Image (cartoon, rainbow, N blue to C red; front, top):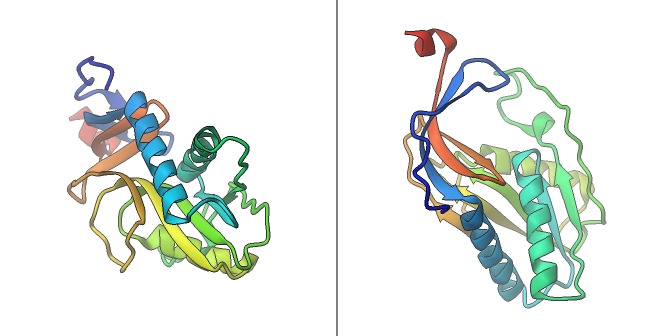
Length: 199
C-alpha cells in the first residue's frame, strides 16, 4: 500500500443513489499491479504458454483487469499478444425478472472460441451467479476447450459451485458489506440509503 492511512468512514455517493461508506482500504494501486502480475504468471504456467488462450473480461469490472492482464503477460513474455474480449451478462442472469435489466455495455469477442482456453476475468467473485451467466453467454460464441476463472477479489459467500482458478486476494467479508474495485485500489464498506445516511 501507499503507506498512508486509509480514509476510513469516507463517504462516496454512487450514481444509483444512497451513499457508500468506506470502512477500510484493502489493496492499493501497487498491490493490484502485484496481484495481476502474479495471476499473469500463473496463467502462463497453468496453460504452458498462451497457445489458444483468450482473456474475456466481464462487463464492467473485469474488462480493465483483463486488459491489464494482457499488458502484463506481454511484458512477461515479450512478443506475445493474447486476445482480449468483453462479455455483457445482463440478459443471461437468473434474476432477470427480479430486478431491472440495464444492458448498456457491449459484448466483444474478438476470436472464435471453439477449441480455445477462455480465461474469464472479473473484479469480485461473490455468489457466483454472474460467472454462471457469463458461462451461458459464452455459449453464443463457440465451444471452448476449457474455461478458467481469474478474479482479483474472492469474497466467499458462494451460492453456486463455482471456484476460481486464479485469485488476487481472498477477502472474507459479511454479506451486507460491499467491495469496490478500481485501478486505484480496493475498498470495503457498506451501502446506505439516503435516509440512513442522513440520520
